Image (cartoon, rainbow, N blue to C red; front, side, top):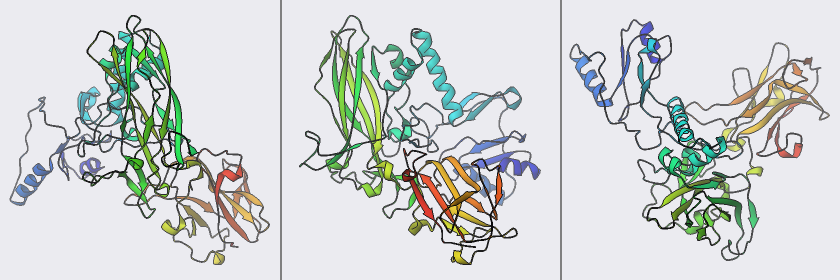
Length: 479
């Protein structure tokens, strides 16, 4: 946008300086045909100081390339998106270089460019998969996926040094060499703990206190047909994440436990997840073993804070007669609580929503004074804290009979409304007509009378056809 505005104003080129240390890759629209370059913050300040005293000349040799350190190298890019999926699936499932990548580009746009994002990481993983298939043509799609995920290397945060949660990095950084050389297979490659048990379990509970736990069967196959292998099972624990502040408000960036200021504080064991393995020491050549694994959620963290825990099952394998070892991982992550019971809609005490509003989005303090007619419409405003498959907004009469959907009153696969610098909200139109169908194609006039709006949001893992699985909000009545 900056480049397009500069071009429209008559600029022949644009230099953009960063507001923090380091550089990023500027993205431009196809309409931009002037040169655009990103420079360091210090260089930008130097140029501004020079302009204050006169003319600043910038020169660059044509068709030459320079190199500079990338502050994104070796770590997760800050702009890389977080999971989980709405069903608590680990997403993304793997990481690859995608920040400040110098690569080919359309010929008419310069032949080469430095870009960042999924557009760079995705072709990298595609190339890795092609190399693996070339080296081991007998592998199918699922085999390739399992090998890439289980041979990836968990990443540490470039600033704190802490292990990065699977909801951000997946299995870790893809490693094609280890995938090609792997002599073992591990399945499943990912554990998304989207439901948990609760109670006192012998061997899992401490002091006979109830815990939340999940179990899974991990199959380890020794694909070396001539050598047996030893197995050492362990775990790598990542920080727990919460999208909520201690007062319950939604955060744009997750907070962590242990937090970054707790390095010198003793962290109680029950505030971290635990993995319990059965005894296993050896797998015969060409054979498989099944491990029944238990994962215990951090009972020492308050469930009201809505923490997501996670880490990696870690398997160190060593084949008979060899000194070298191979490491495989299986990322796991889950919710510390009953995810099914979570409210989808933002708390009215914190956000003031859901609420009825006028056509300018001003909240109507006394809905009983609202009159909806052909020439007077209103809005239903709401905010979503937890992704939901279905949100419906309907008009209900004084006898509790539903007349139909409001305008934009049926929405599927809704993401959360993030509290950014300008918080996003969702809404529906209240008018003198409703729609009989979800698609909003069959309109019906609403006869004069007293009505209210009913907002329903499907809770996580809920049944679309079961009304008890919805969170429901009813507005005050209006005419």
